[in-house]
Image 1 (cartoon, rainbow, N blue to C red):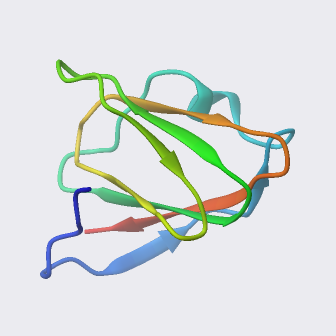
Image 2 (cartoon, rainbow, N blue to C red; image 1 turned 90 degrees about the vertical axis):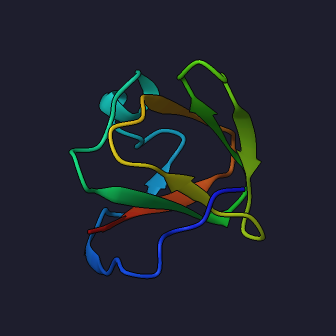
Amino acid sequence: MKSLPPNVAAYKRTDIFTKDTTPKGLLAQHRTLEGVWGKIVVLEGHLTYVIDDNDGETLELSPAQFGVVEPQVIHHVSPQNGVKFYVEFYK
């Protein structure tokens, strides 16, 4: 699993999302801006995080395993029933 670089700091956080409240933009392929990292934090349940680049890596996130979004890497999420999660942004 990738990790956040030591020289970045959190600057913004989303609301807490469930399967029913996840914005459509997160379900479709999207990317962060240049220099912006993301940390997907699951509070309850499970969330599938798909990195849609050449490697096509799929990760199952849970309260024990957060996801790291690298700058400008195309990705999307697939929330499972019972999930609660948020995304924190770093630069």
